[in-house]
Amino acid sequence: MVYKPIIVVAGEPNSIFNEIFFKSLKKKYKSPIILIASLSIIKLQMKKLNIYKKIRLINFLDIDKTHLDNKKINLININFNQKKPFDQISSKSNEYIRKSFDIAIQILNTKITNKFINGPVSKKFFLKKKFLGITEYLAHRTKTKNFAMLIYNKNLSVCPLTTHLPIKKVSAKINKSMIKKKIKLIDIFFKKYLKKKPQIAITGLNPHCESIDSFNEDEKIIRPTIKNLKKLNYKISGPFSADTIFLKKNREKYNVIIGLYHDQVLTPIKTLFEYDAINITLGLPFLRVSPDHGPNERMMGKNKSNPLSLIQALTFLDTKE
Image (cartoon, rainbow, N blue to C red; front, side, top):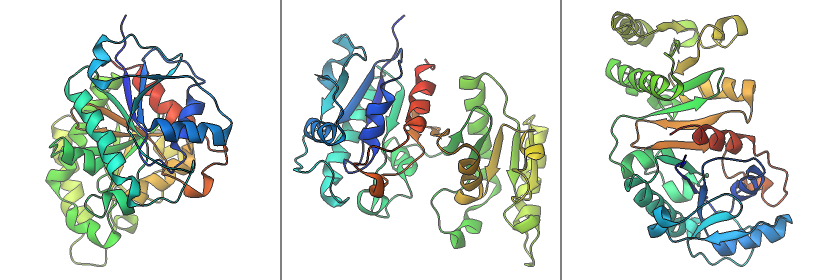
């Protein structure tokens, strides 16, 4: 059987990603892994971290004609001049990162593969407030209007309805249509890739689902939407108070908990599973997964970063066709 390759964009060169990428290759995968990164940076960081792996340079136009395995790092080289293995994160790497994504999207558009992983980028320098995160950046690049962020663990996943949005702007974004679209994406993903129907809980926006304001979003928006979705045979319950839904006896009834804003559900899932979770973007024309961490400047070059989240991302895509 021929397995589709996994395309990996390294992202910000001054980050821990290449370190955890090297470490993740200790595990065996059936799908060939193709890294899009700078050869010079890879060599510099290997030397700094006392890691050595053989590299196979490949032309992205010839992927379908090239025999690939994971005995070497399959590398599509994006030129980027840097004298030190690690430097301060800045806008200097923006063009390099953009070219990496350009090549990745071009490959994915050929339908040679639908498997994609990206390393972290700097929101401050690369995204420049134009996009809330890479989720939104990729949605823009692929002209995807309806998408969702799913932080996935085999035991429990979470989905924030709004992503990297300031708290003061959250309530204005919440509406019935948005909730329905996200839940439909989750339902499609679970049925297609996990072969099961999701059991969904949704939190309230306000503490204890109560509000001193005359307009209570939990009663006026969330509860009627849940009622409507139940009639359409979705397995969904709520709204639940966010401070108790993650208690063991409550969360074990569900495999997805939807939150109204980012930290409402990402804080508890990272507390429960730490690195054992991956970020999946639903709704894109390909399967996009990223390890659930950022560039982590303070850990660069220390060779102490945990590769588990990237291993889980690679393993997840390795099992999907």
